[in-house]
Length: 216
Image (cartoon, rainbow, N blue to C red; front, side):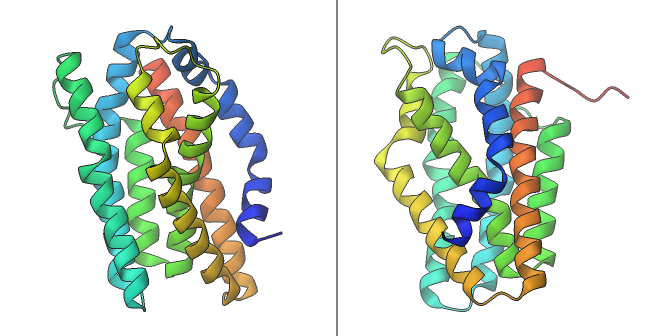
């Protein structure tokens, strides 16, 4: 079993909670209310900007040209590829760009930026991995079950597509490589970073579903 296999096994209850969440189940059957999806897209656009920054920080800290290039391309794709999907929905639903991060988005992006700048490269890689991996698995889960006329088909196709699949596989290889040279303490830090980001994935969708905002 690879190190990343162990990581996934560790967060399997969290992933199951994601699959059972109302946001995911209603996205899958096409019944998710438009305002809920619009809220999600607004926050996700803000998330992706900082996710790209976190990946750029990993690129700057990478020790080999291949790893530098990989993280740089991940950062570029977060802006150029995934944001293009958001711009499509911004136009379709006449959504105005949001500038304020709500609690889950704020917590998640600040955690990623802090971890990729203050922790080791290996721990930073483990922290960004759930965004790749959980989204792919959720995308494939929904793709296999969603009707063709689903109003969120573009979102589903993006995260279940081959291009995203290749990026996830590349990120898994990088994380396993870093784990091979990590000591016991760093390995535990990697596990914890992966767990925390996985929990924050659930909270991000939950905030969108409840349209949770700052209470004070």
